[in-house]
Structure formats: structure tokens, C-alpha cells
Length: 390
Image (cartoon, rainbow, N blue to C red; front, side, top):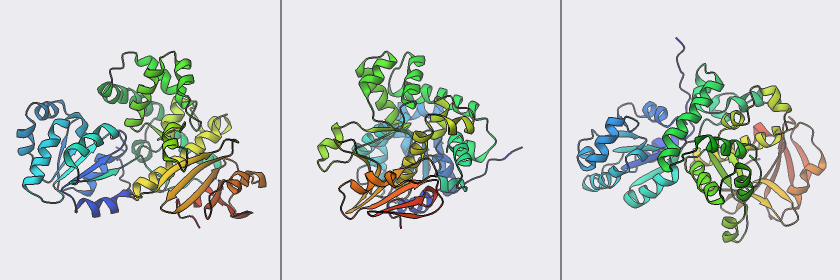
């Protein structure tokens, strides 16, 4: 029998430190990103209760006060978004006995759960988010294009990276489970086939500006429905919307974001790519590589508990920079290229955008670090240190 191996998560060190400083710790992230596995590995002495179990869920919903009072602490409560009724009673329990490390909660519906946590457990809970594996966590950094696109196709969920898994079966099952358990709980989506088409249309636009009106038209749904379905996908961390950078913060909220999927394996599955060679040669090879690196930066932010913000830049003349990391007073700018050949014009956008004192990096498959002039440094993408590259 093939046994699934455990791969350590970067978040563990920060999580272990901070979880001992609060009575409640909350870990959110997409379904099957490894939250439960990590927590049970880190805290083997904790009791474990999962609200995926229908009988447990029913007991918590019917008698939340009794349920919480009967919990053996310390305890891990998994997928707590299915029983939010218990949160006020966890607050009561915490306030009556202020002992750190008593409750660890997980959830896969980030925004909804966070709203309830803010209402019930403000000041009592430490908050973390766990996405699927980063490249560093997989243990292998694929420095050549073919290997990199194999990893992109495989994706970063723990199961395909720790056990023998047929990718089509895994992602097909993941999609079905996700729609049945998460989408239908948040919103009563009756036409599942149209929702799947909607996801496929979004996949075809990964790495591009989000045009909700056009997506709604292409899918044959109303603008309001498209907005609502996008919200579901963002709440459950299937997609990530990267906001444009403006000095005026209001503009950041009203201008169109760029759309990314939090896992490239699911993205490739939705695009119907079945092998890395076809993906590498396909029209989306550049955008899916950009998707991988933007999400790698997002994982860095979450895994290190960084307060840095991620943006992209685009001005009225169409000058664009793929990624900006704003950390305190420091700006780090990144242009992402999926090839190995470096040309001077690739650095022109990086050099021209008005961020005084910013670090500017061109990331590509070229294995040789190279100064490009005007403060731009070309480096191999696998040597990037997000927010602090040398």
C-alpha cells in the first residue's frame, strides 16, 4: 500500500508561536489545502472534531451551548463554517476561562467565516490562511520549462504531491465536491452545468483583467449572477483577485482587478490540458506561468504572516507591471516572462513606472542573473525572494 507522506508547511513556525498567545486560533483556506493534516500533525494531543460529519453538525446546530460546554479541550474544530452557531458560545467559554491554545478552528469559506469571527471572537483569535503547497514546500524547484509545466499541470494541492493520484480523477472529484459542499451552501446554484461553464470561461481569462460584463454575456447569465458567482469563488479561495495599485485607495477598489486561480492544477483541468507538453506549447503558457508566480507571492504573504500588500500596475498609456509587493515603505516590482531569452525591451515597463527607490526584477527561465540598466535586475524566477529580493 502506498502511504501518504507528510510535507512540512512554512506556516508551522509562525502558527506554533502565535497559537500559544491566543485562546482561539483560526486557519482558513481552500478545501483540501492541507489545514486539517497540518494541524493534526502539529497538535497530536488535541482532540479533533469535524463538522463534515452530519451527526456532529446537527448536534452543534441544535444545541450549540451544550455542544461547546461538552467539548474536550484543547480541541481542533474542523470546517466550522458548517456550524457557525457555536461561535458565540466559544466566546463565552473563552471569556469564562482565559487560557491560551484552547480552540483551533478551520474553515474553507474565508470571508463568511471571518465576518462571524470578527463579530464573536474579536481580540480573542489569531487568524491564519493556508493555501495549497508552495513550490518550496513540495521539496522540488523545477528550473527547466518542461519540469515546471509538469508541476503547473499537477498543481499544488497536497494529494497529488504526496501520493499516487490520477490528476483527472482528483480534479474532477474536487470540482464536484466543491460545488456540492461549498457552492450550494453559500448560494443556491441550481444550474450546475452553467456554473461549471462559468468557471471554464474564467479559466480562459486567468492572468487578465476581469471584465464581468463580458464574462456574463459569454456565459449567458445576468451581470448580477456573474458578480454573485465570482464572490462565491473568491470567498472559497478558488480564485484570487489582484487589485491595481493607485495612490488613491478608492480607485483600487473600483478599478478592474486581474483574475488568478489559487491552484494551477485546477486551472489546467478547467482548460482541459492533459499533458505538460501541450500546456507548454499552448496559447496560455505565459499567463498560467504568471498565475503560478503571483500565487507563489500570495503564499509567501500568508505563510510568513506578512502585512505586505500585493498589487499590479497599469497606467492610462497601457504601461503595466505584473506584480507589486508593497511592504511598509518598500516597493518591489516584478515583471514575469515565461521564456528563457532576455531582451532589453522586456525591462522597459519596470524601468519607467514611477516608484522611487523601488526594487525592480525581471523573472524568467534565464538562469543567469543580469543587470538590465535603470535599476532593473533580471534573475532566474526560482531565485526570487518575495518582498526582499537581492
